[in-house]
Length: 514
Ligand code: NAD
Image (cartoon, rainbow, N blue to C red; front, side):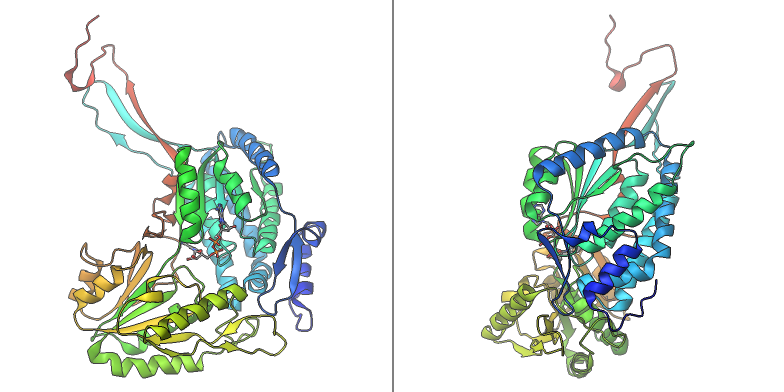
């Protein structure tokens, strides 16, 4: 499909992409949920809202699909995910473009998000032959003890607007090879990309055969709506795991409901990520890393850099470099390949940014940038100049996640103190140190170092690869997604002891001679 659509409206372009991907027009033509384009504030399409009864029916259907799917051998389940990865490769340009239209991400980030989906599919396909347990030494003769991994059932996925498709793929690719069915509730701000992903998944489903049979119907479904639709997933007894990505407030609402029915949570919540720049750091590299992490995606990544601690000896040298990077960052239509900073998602995000900057000013901070930027033809959109805020103390709005491009910058003298400041917020997602001193780097990574789920050296806190486990501690929710051994979250562990002798010795020497 041609994307040479400079003259087309965002709605025309989005709808052409959706039709090209096989989404029937009726699915995005009407309904109470409005997909808004943050690039110019126009409406891209409408989708239905699923009420609790419809969510319940969807989950029941997924539950029936699971009963079939669980007996499909894992490498064959991997074949379905391989086919889905193939469909994504074919549609990468179009889906990436739709991500840009619906979230306002710049072109390379829209494409990068789809690449992340493809990468996690590749990872899951390999994993489908490696869902391995342990053999464990038994204390009893002629006994063999082992650990087996079995699917859970229906996995619910609730996702945030800022990674509208990759987060689903992290979860779904693993959940499916592990033998589960999935029900997805995307953010109400980004329903169209979810429709597109579902259509691509259906392409893979249509091509899949195992011993002449198709994959079960309703193996993966999408439901649309806001918090109430999410709650219907969270409360349904058939949903054994809910992977919920979003704000800490959402996690606080979801976690007790899951605990009440002993369902498994996988929570990926807010971050308030910091970086430390040490005297030995490569300042050119650090400037580029800080610029991408703090301003990229208009500060709307959970891993965006929000706090920067700079050693006092290099503060005067680093600051002008950072100021230049901030002043020169091209802001505008994310479809323009020279743009690096696209719009905020909506007006509420811009209000939250202004309120945080006002609070910082009131507390004595020196604020540079942060103002609304006019982009011709986009009066209903919310473009801002990323803000750079010099502070003397870590206090007020710096202690919270504001989902916008605000970077608080503060001097430090002792590395131990900078690490203490790094850890002195409620969230614990990502963190970085810039140094060429081995001792400083290792201290930062040690048990006395960063308390976050991600700790990087000479890389900013954002932009993770899929091979590692992704997630964070404290108010970030404690969940881990994607690589490493995260697949275990999507399975239940069975410990099995087999007696192949004719005696019945009891463990711990217990006698029960009847
Ligand atoms: P949000 O919390 O407003 O919404 C996230 C999702 O949760 C949406 O689908 C929403 O409809 C749903 N939801 C909200 N309340 C709910 C409830 N009570 N029950 C069930 N579902 C509910 O977040 P957002 O504005 O879309 O995304 C931004 C936030 O997400 C930021 O805080 C960001 O840090 C976080 N985030 C975290 C990660 C991570 O991996 N840690 C990744 C992306 C985004």
